[in-house]
Structure formats: structure tokens, C-alpha cells
Image 1 (spheres, rainbow, N blue to C red):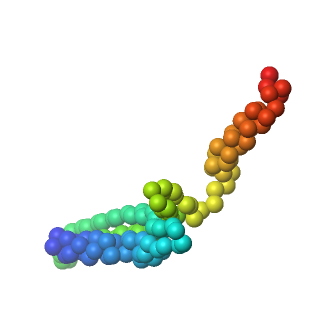
Image 2 (tube, rainbow, N blue to C red; image 1 turned 90 degrees about the horizontal axis):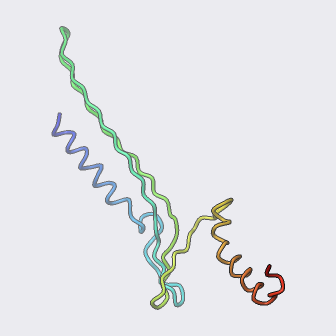
Image 3 (tube, rainbow, N blue to C red; image 1 turned 135 degrees about the vertical axis):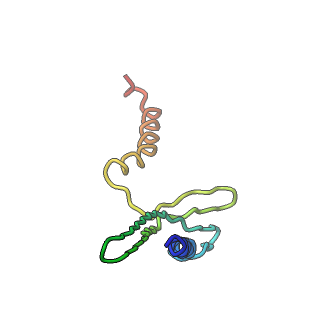
Length: 122
């Protein structure tokens, strides 16, 4: 029974290695004008196994099982231009996450306003 389990686990692992790639989910890296774009994915995995044996007056029984789950989700692109690299998300943020994302721009505008109108500073 142990040998069959090892073969099954090897097949599952091989499947994950072949499928959990950005080129399988999104595609290969590509160029867009002066930008080099590399797809980025998030991979989540889960494994489960079980086994059993039985020996009673009626006969003998064995059993084993294994399973795996794989979730692959595109999350964005690494975008390079010259020596500058940025991450461009494919998701849209909402709520508090969106507010924190906009905070640097709001802070910059506030500081510019303070410079332009010093009389507003208390």
C-alpha cells in the first residue's frame, strides 16, 4: 500500500509542477513598447491523505487515498523600463485598502497646498 501512495504523490507533485506556472495561467513575459512585462500569479495548495486496514472474521481489507487542491490566480505584472521596476496589480482595491493606496497622493497635495498658502497653517 505504501508504494502505491508514493506513486500517487509523485504524480500529484508532477502535475502541480507542470500546471502552477505563469505561462500556463496568464502567458509568457512580453514587451509592450518600452516596457518589459512579467506576469505574476498566486498559488495556493492543499494536500490530504488517508489510509486504513481491516482484519476481521469475514476477511481482510485495505484502503488508502490522497487528494490535492490547487488554486492559481493572476495578481498582476512586474513592469520594467530601464532600471525601474514596478508592480501593476490586476485587482482593484476597495474600502480601506483603496484609501491607503491613495494616501501618498493626498498627502502630497496637502503639503503643496500648505506651501502655497502659509496663512492656513495654525
